[in-house]
Image (cartoon, rainbow, N blue to C red; front, top):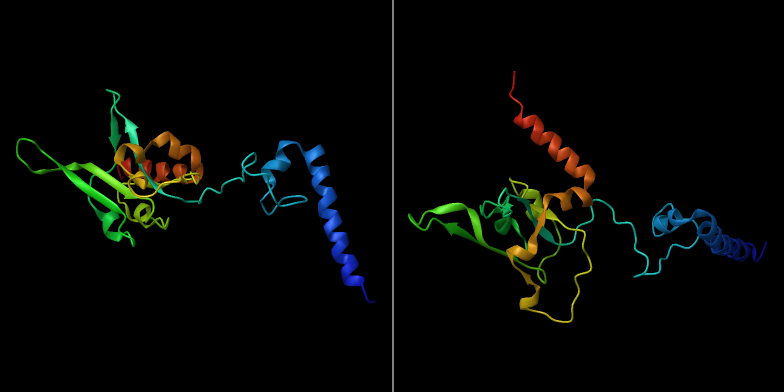
Length: 190
């Protein structure tokens, strides 16, 4: 029985090798979409950057601020500058300054400045988890590398802002659950 393990290993290798071509020829784009997943036929590698792995819904990179467009076309951020996200952030990479009323000088529930240092951010998602207003969500954009450091990786509020439709597109299941909960809270209790 010497060499039987070697023969079994080679048979498995050849099976994966040839099933890759069969899947690519007869499977079309479905086989390329499945490549890199547990359901893949044949080789598990993809030809990055020409091909991209299907990103799971719960994948997270850096936080972004959710906004909706108002009737006047201005961005209406959900963020109320409560500061919970900056307090719970383990790396303290979030800075917020609250907007003040020009007449009274009292704070307004809106952020004047909002910054995230993506060099420090460890993509934990704690800020999005603890945000009581669903103003911060985790993004799927992992192609953020650059050749510089420092101020270019400190993202200001306009760069962090993404529309609610973008969130609905990258996380459709989470969005549906959140909207159902929001609609249930809005209905009067009987």
